[in-house]
Image 1 (cartoon, rainbow, N blue to C red):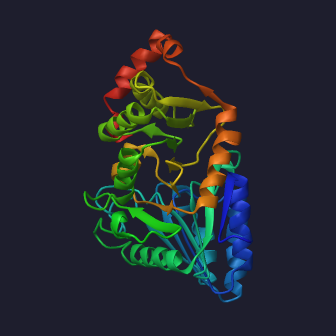
Image 2 (image 1 turned 45 degrees about the vertical axis):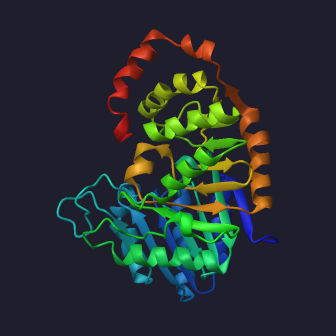
Length: 361
């Protein structure tokens, strides 16, 4: 790539980019991913990895046990990978008495980190499966030695502690102390002082003076984040939230709806995208951006292991802005308070019931 980064805006483009980097890998491949299915997409990637293993590359695969449960039970494929010296681990097993169980099954490794040859870092929202191939996604490949070293250190720590009874796994430094470079790798762990991405969002929303764009497939934030979003809207009137009209999880859609009336009343611009929008990114004052795995819901904000890249690169931010205007807002329905009030009584009743469990969604 001519630049030191490359963006992909669909699941297919992200997967094609990942496969291209795997084909060209010379030394090592490290993959940490939440959702992996051994279907057509997953099988193609495994075949590529086996070919690279035959070239004596060092390959490690770290899958979350819930997101990749189907694959974890495929003993034949796992044995084939093992025979080619490809190391595989599963994070936080849901099976009783497993040695990699973290006591509380609710805490998931939701990260997507792929490191090629210690030269390239990929992260973003992509799932490795045919099921999600038509989804709108956002991924980024970065060629930068410093960020790759940081990500590799986090991966190594996570890998080494998969079988340890600890929740403090694979954390970066506090985001406030990171250098002001074009790209910074940030992680999050479900511990009070390790929620670096959550604090990053809160700080930048609170500091915004011109605009905020928040793009997420699932939108069930906590009260603190909702409060800061409303304050930002009242401050500059330029807060935009873009979410899919319908996701694959209807109960989460209902929980999301419980926030919308309050946001519209505060002047927040809310859009329903017509397709399954699974991208997770944000832009603050057109000066900083974030691309990663974090959904704006309680699971990601409080309970999952997450990762992403804080961005100061002006060209990258311009590309993201163009994507928002041409690919997202142009194909979205902008909500208004009057029509929102007129949704069906049954929908409103269902939303009230879902409100009671929103903190675990």
